[in-house]
Amino acid sequence: MSLQAVCEQIQTPDSRVLAQAQARLDRLTKPQGSLGRLEEMAARYVMITGELKPSVPRGAVFTFAADHGVTREAVSAYPREVTPQMVLNFLRGGAGVNVLARHAGVEVNVVDIGVDYDFGNEPGLIRKKVMRGTGNLMVESAMTRAQAEQALMVGVDLSTQAVRDGIGLIGTGEMGIGNTTSSAAITAVMTGRSVAEVTGRGTGIDDAGHARKMAVIQRALDLHRPNRTDALGVLATVGGLEIAGLAGLMLGAAAAQVPVVLDGFIAGAAALAAVGLQPRCRDYLIASHQSVERGHQVILDHLALKPLLDLDLRLGEGTGACLGMSLVCASIKIYTEMATFGEAGVSEKA
Image (tube, rainbow, N blue to C red; front, side, top):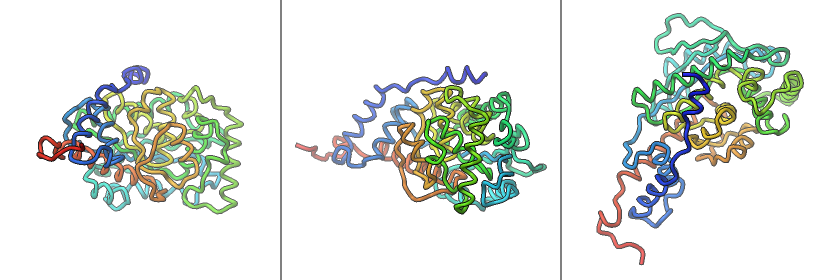
């Protein structure tokens, strides 16, 4: 299936189903609306999936890993060697995303979509390498349009297969030293905000590093002059392979009527690209948390998404997504397991 066909397959969820779900929530043994965002999530899940009597879904987080050529400009506090080292940590279950996934009862899938490293036959790794890291966006395009589309289709194929395998809730994760630089560039273009407004400190760079990072992004935007109406072109010129993979993951899930729980800033940048390719994709996205990374609030405002949590997170990997997925599953249990006034023999409000 082509990228265009996937985008065309995404439909706007049926608001009549949302109303039916809300009607059930209003009959549960509680004052109407007293469970707040949990009720909102349950109703949205029912609307997205079209299942009026849903089961608690199997959840899976996809953590895409890739390297970035822009790390040559000293935009990160960590060397690029950390990307493959963390991939191995994910596979051995020792990273933050592994801990929170075990807590939430969801699977972690680690995808090499563009790490500049040979992993050999490392067990558990999903091998989908498009190229060995992107080009240095300050002096050249990060990738070609064909490579960007290939990375998008990796994500589409993975979410499509996951749904076939029984996954009903998908979370986003990533690993790539330098990827907050690409994400800030994407965010500036897609939202029309200035580089200063959307560029944070990533892994913890100092003032000089932050100024250098903003200068690198501005030079890249001046060089490539990406057009926000061409999301594929934006990904190709200033994006990352893992960001494109995540955008494709969202599109594939939306085409299959499966909700996607976003992680933080990098996932948000991927969401901007996905919604740029197909605006209806936005209806399938759930924001797990608000990152302390400066541009994340800009993204959430632009997409009109309200985060579930605000815990000052900025790790990525899918950590926030795991916590958000846990809350989504809790909301479905409320919807399906809680008794109505009639079932419980409890008097309703006069």
